[in-house]
Length: 270
Image (cartoon, rainbow, N blue to C red):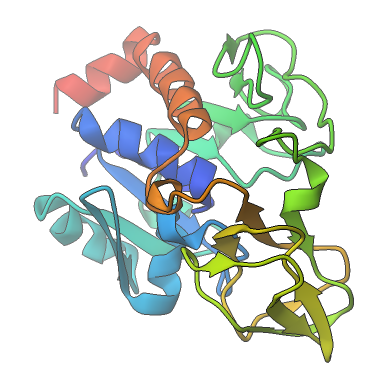
């Protein structure tokens, strides 16, 4: 059995972590729900759930139907993605490390025996309680730091500032219902232009910019859910590359993994 790192969640931050680990030769497997709610789908391995395969900065994510398909995907230098919200894979193929990257931002009950090392990303995780190590995800001086004691900063509820825009650049569902999109990620939009519709209600561009994120069309969403992201900068490169935040958090996860001798010995002696 190949020692591997299981990443719970396939959104953009989780995918930045996956890339960092993949680049240093670790075996990574991503688990997702049946209808992922990733907004930045162009840099999220969760997109493989919809398309069967996705590519982020040259690394391919491949949807698998069962855990025994993972080794074949690893042999191709790719990352397997499995729909397994209940973590049934733990029964037959337990991971060496489990990274909870679902970004729930509230306390999560989690058993520390799920893996030799359990790592939690962001608010809601407390080292020694529901994870062995927690990673700071808030932007600022401590982003990417590993906490072996204590917990990350609380969720501010305010997105990072981009050209003086914060909350304004986030698109939220105006009602509960099925989401329909009118543009694609990477498309330029003008202020007032319709980007998506939920239950017959339009969500329009808050300013001129580029659509950086958009939940997959056809998904049932609840009122207030983040469903899109508009970037005021005209360049589209950011739509297709992982963020500095994702990479910083990935660096913290890598540090946590390699700082434990019992984990290193399992990885390098296999």
